[in-house]
Image (tube, rainbow, N blue to C red; front, top):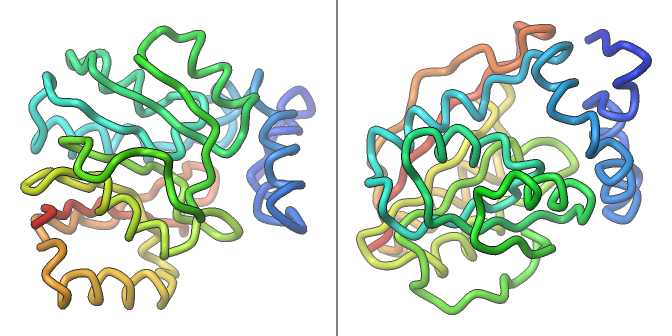
Length: 211
């Protein structure tokens, strides 16, 4: 993966190699102002495009949606273009979230850690999305429990997840939530090349209905 010097702060390898959550947050803050350009121009990230297509197929645009780990709001922008106008966002990085806030597509933006309990009431949202956050050195599989908790019964949880090297802890957590009667699988999308500059990296979109 080659990222030009102007976008060096947004090289994904810097995020994957962060030594701890504090450094990860700092690096995202530093990259915030060039992140969208780097992802679009050099990295060729398409996860938000594919997840938006999945959301549009399954979710009515008039629902209340939480964009978890929203970053700069790349997914939110896609959804807003399809008429979604009741969205809130959260992210670990204040800098990334500030860029998302300036886009004017979210009713509310708050700094939150997907590895911890989220300050939303249970059964709040009709749909919850998470795009690109379930990746090495980022949000853990335990985050899924909270996404289920804040989603209303019959609501949907939709997210991207690596498929070429899918982490075992996510498979186990997904199965545990299903076996516990907390959600049921609606759709597992076909794997797609998610990073143009690294064609061996593949993701798929998952859609679950909360029970």
